[in-house]
Amino acid sequence: MTWTRFSQQPRAQELLYHSLRNERLAHAYLLAGPKGSGKKQMALHLAKSLFCSEREADACGACVTCRRIEGGNHPDVLFITPDGASIKIDQIRSLQKEMAMRAVESSHKVYIIEHVDKMTTQAANSLLKFLEEPPAGVLALLLTEHSHAILPTILSRCQIVQFSPLSAESIAEKLRAEGVLAGMAQVASHITTNVEEAMTLSQSESFAQLRNLVIQLVQECKQRNSSALLTIHDMLQKSDKSKEELPLFLDLLILWLRDILYLQVGRHAHLINSDQQDVLQGQALVWTKAELLRGIDLVMETKNRIERNANAQLALERLVLQFQEG
View 1 (cartoon, rainbow, N blue to C red):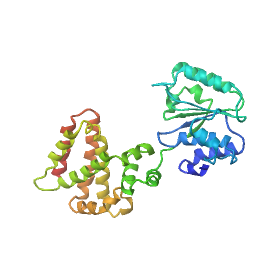
View 2: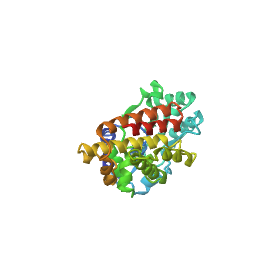
View 3: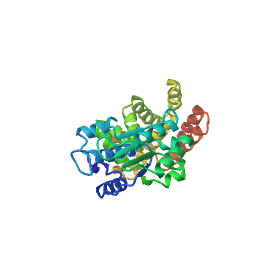
View 4: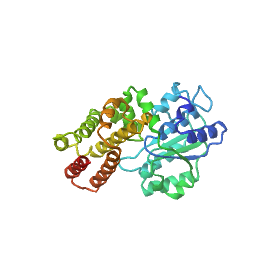
């Protein structure tokens, strides 16, 4: 549980760690980046590192203090999350009262505000005043996925720490460490940059079923007397969720077609569906490179049409017919 665990975000890690170690922490940081990039985990680690009784400028994660912060039960570390759809002024006023009190267990007090971009105008103005005149020893950690939605005056009073999306390799490694099968971990990590979403996908039965449906459809499109249109019809009639899953289905289809193309050009190391290499090799014999390149373009076009509210069944049937035309 040391700073080294944040190797996927080296710039953010280095900035915060060295500022802490050299006792040069700013009074407020804005941790900005996409969902699942580790902002909250790093904010928590910084808070723990200020209070940890076992390590200097770092956190052991195991001592009583670290565990209390992790559980949200430390008197000098306060968490604010949206109350419903927004962070309200009463929440910021309560925060100010808490931060104005003397620290209970050290000379520090920390507050962590998640989704700070969701503050009401009144709450944002109240926080701004607090940032302009922070009490001694108080550290603000503001978290957002949408820094453009935050008042410029608040941004100017924070040191901005930018988080990058996690790489697919990093996400797949995390999933495998949690016991997810390597094949599912690899595919899920190329669908989303959010670890939690990737975990949910990879453990979902419907995710595996959608990939199997992709494999079936690509196979059927090259068979005589193809039942590909029937497969599409059955998919859409199967459940109410089927239309919601169409973007995911089309993303999986793009990845599959791309893998067939990779096999044909000898880029085996770049395969995403590497656990299905035998099936891919069989399909690589019946698809030409030109058909695959055109097919990927057609899938992307179909996805855009459905996002613009085109009839889903007609759009998919059109896609299948275009596949079969070659």
